Amino acid sequence: MINVIKKIKEINPEIVRKDFLLSLVAMGLLAMILFITDIGCPTRFFTGICCPGCGMTRAVIHLAKGDIKGAIYYHPLVFTLPIIVILFLFKDRINKKFLNVVLIIIIVLFISIYMIRLIDISNEVVYADITKSIFYRFIIKFKK
Image 1 (tube, rainbow, N blue to C red):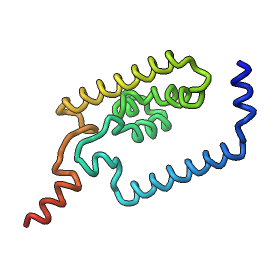
Image 2 (image 1 turned 30 degrees about the horizontal axis):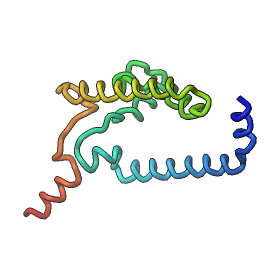
Image 3 (image 1 turned 180 degrees about the horizontal axis):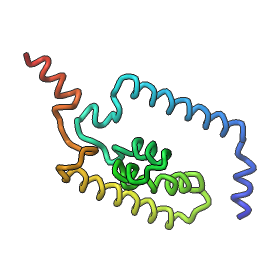
Image 4 (image 1 turned 90 degrees about the horizontal axis):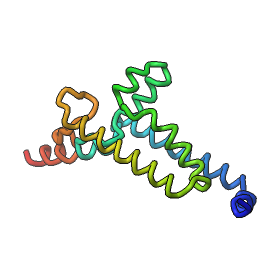
């Protein structure tokens, strides 16, 4: 406990604040670029295959509007986000074994849900269609 207190005292709040603000600005700029260019998910844009997190932004937007059913439709694991944030913020104060077990469970859940959604033909959120990838379109364009 004393070591934790010493580490906290050593942290310069000004540096943490600057790093946090720079991270927010960088994420905001990236989100704006992806939105303006209509790229959306970079993984889907380049490969034509949705990533395990596809639908999460739409799920959060629906959750913010109070639409729980819509949030679950777009990503059933939207409720793991607060857990992930808490784990990230307090990772130095949480038992490492517990942290690793929780993270492994979350990763297994994400991969399992992703595979189920990918296999489900009726799912409109997650799909694999390489004809929608930039690489495919590039090859077709120069093949002509």
